[in-house]
Image (cartoon, rainbow, N blue to C red; front, side, top):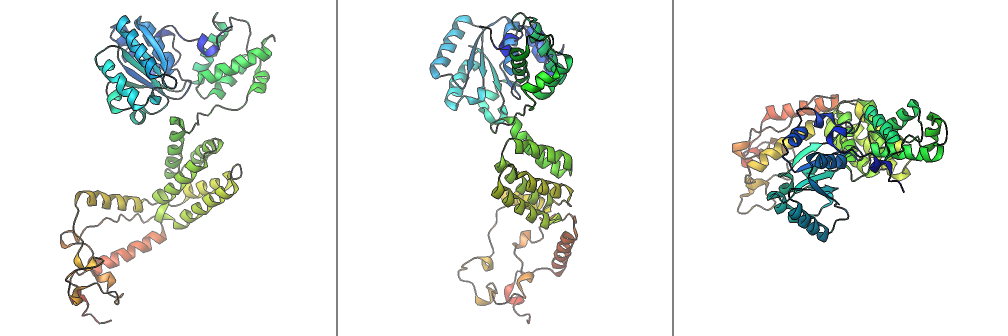
Length: 422
């Protein structure tokens, strides 16, 4: 029985690897490492199907070093111990760990001393950001290399290689250039996804003189979105949604919203839109913030697929609305200061002040005095955290009141204030 195409076309050396030119140029670290026969522990990270494990295996073969392959999802402590024993026999040895981010802390700690003393060189492959998913100890001992999605041209090269190789389809079928280009377009840079479609089309239509565009379309016309909630691409799309709204690019924002809607992740959409509304639009258009809250409530009530309509309205509203980050910038400035300069609350502001004369107590019965009282201690009385943006008529009105209050001034001596007549 023939292996799946994704396994059949794996390269034997780095020179056979498709794409990843940023990692495989003449003067690249990987090529120089192979030339000098000096192996390094590395973590390859990127979206699914982009060749992370393939790169690790090709590197090991190019080094002509014995290697052991494990998958962190299924590898037990005994499997790790067996790999260490192999490494001691075959030294130097490479341990390729697929889905390395799935190793729990205990297993990561177990591997650490063997990476440090050179028992084996660790090559990890992961779809998760290693700066988040891996322990600092492991991360600091590995060079981190990002693997990019393949271009459509690179995917076509991989498909043609699968059609021709003896380990692949061995020339048993012919596909039109349009059919291969369509598969590549659907793949989203994931060669494994593209090879699966190619193999399905071969099984169903391989006896034809040439498999064309229509035959491939009958297999699949749904593009490959790497939108698993646990994958890096998902969080990148959530981040891109907010940045697109912040940059007032309504078309980009709608695209990223669509991706998240296709993934059915209403929770992430709700949270991100609400944060964006307050953080990036805020006082620039308070009504748009309220409308966003109402759109989120409507989306919750109707659910998908209809939820896309109120969500789309909210995204368009936020994108094209006046923006103001005064709320976010102001509180960040206050938090930065408060974390470095703690101080004591004045006695007259305390909930239950002790041994304070009546004339010095907070005047609950004098609302006319409240805006004249000094609320910060004397040494910090002139601090200003508020960062006005003047993004809307509403915010301009707020700032006018702010300037009026500053001009009026504040007094910490309440007994003196209370002498002012109502």
